[in-house]
Length: 176
Length: 176
Length: 176
Image 1 (spheres, each protein chain N blue to C red):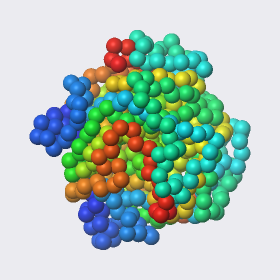
Image 2 (cartoon, rainbow over the protein chains, first blue to last red):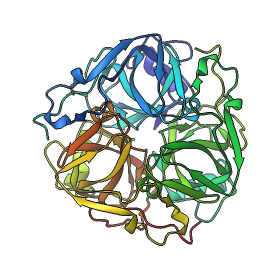
Image 3 (tube, rainbow over the protein chains, first blue to last red):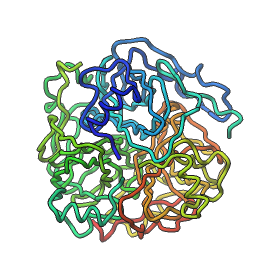
């Protein structure tokens, strides 16, 4: 079941779901609208060959920019972080959706999941599929997170647990 | 819970979910297949800088084309509208998915949501990620809308309520 | 409801959900991580005009490459197949998500659905939105499949039922 407005407010008021900071317009009809944080990451190189399976760590491939404005050139992507630090209950899963207004401007995100039991800021890939440069601002609502009840409980225990700020990918050496 | 075929037909026959026009092949195993409508929108400019936070309205950035064929150049996107005008119950949320056949040709959409209580035609960003021009036709099934029960009720009350035809994005001046 | 770890293991142990081969790290907190199989498909032509509505079959447009490494050039896409052959229960639907680590490298997939009652390898469009070439490997976990309970039962009966290996799109002649 997708949690509607009142159910989300109950989860927050009982402390089972944490969203910090929580603005008056964060809780929407059927989900949470999360905001753009104060830094983003872009690849530091172009024309390189990136082999995740051979990388211990990929941090060096990215440049992290502290800024109140995010300028995304045509046909390029940035990693954005949410302003909010969220803490998910162990029986609710988040499905990442793009705010429909931003999709209409030509932005895209991939479908990804925020696991039950995850906590941290959320890092999201945002692609500009348009032939124009698109400029976004810190504090802008961009990520529409749908929260879905899970059958059974689970606690995310992956690498990104507790991540703060925009977080580049880990290396996958040894895993593939 | 995702509503399967029989549940969808019940919602439609009781009038709680409206899909107009409703074709014999609209209701599928686990969702609705909606069709391409008779107009699409593309950016009227290339190489511009688009700042949603400074726009009252973005209509002037787009050209709306009435057509039975949609020609999408390589690595470009269009805003499509569904032929169908839908009316959602207040306790069911729609998750926009791309028909798998069209994904295999190289098309992409972002994950977006159709809120409980929304009514209107649905505007969807469709990106051609391939190195070839892809030509679609009016009336073609393209959007696979999954309908998920919500816990709690909510009524969409946003700007796009009752939208008819392809609808460019609103401006976000004053909001960010 | 999204099926969590224990529920997924129950479905597999009772044989209602089949995943073959099943590795120790396939079942995750809230879904299945499926692996890259041993072949992929790319368009055999560039600069062509592709009209799905006029095609009986689109197989001739694609080149299928048997390989343990998948090299995806900047701003291009491939069709990947899962290593696993899955068999879905008739009351559970799969939602395709990209593993967050791969999204952070600049890869994107569209939101697509694995219908209740579907069986086969799963073919997924993977786009490289980055300015760098990205190299993936056979056996790498890439697709995070969320399994959601359906209300009502349904059996997928489409063209791709029982598909083996990477499967290019069907033609849509006669349908639009």
